[in-house]
Length: 333
Image (cartoon, rainbow, N blue to C red):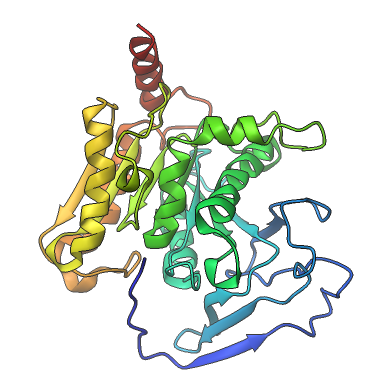
């Protein structure tokens, strides 16, 4: 659900089909988007979630030479979905928080550069670790509302399962999605109970790990669960959400953002925040957009995270958690 006008970059399509890291007998091993990242597949090699006829196929990368060295701008042909972890746990201002970033691309491509790689230095300044999600795409034959959303849930469980190893706070693991990526982050706010119920088999190594995010970012979103079903059930322990979009210049995505906000607001969900800006268009990631207010949504997001306690030292209870507990208790009355 994304329209993107390609910037004037020089592109190179890098086909890794002959990579020494992959063969027809084993799942493809992706190339890092940002140097130094920890790469992990979302699923075990024998997982029934994977398409074993295609899991060995190489991802295709478009790169730009505007930056030196050349950086990967977008990715297609994803059959072995993965996460790329960039830890901030060695930073003096480490918070123990982590955000899983789901890039957009209309389910046709993943804009892992402007809506993935660019997030790493931004969140590092906040003392927050960044995890770039490479989910499966509709263009490659997958069902976005099922396969890609499951990838988002699996990413949350996988990061939480490694929290001790990576020195993360397991109560500060959130997800943020851009455009089509927000079609993955938004469902994680309300459908985690169903995912956990349907993915708790004895053979699943993450069966006992919570898939619930501690906070959710919904940035110029595609349709959310509330678009087709306004009465979608909101769990009692629903996490807080931050929503941002341009307004008239990106009308359809602003309306989808409003669908989500209105349902949450009607339910009285705490710590819900939305910014709809008077000027601006669709896409753009974290860039400043020539200095218009929409370009400062990232500052508002950082303020929101700080206000809810996610930028405090690791291990300290958050305001968000206390508010969630109070809301859950009230919902049970």
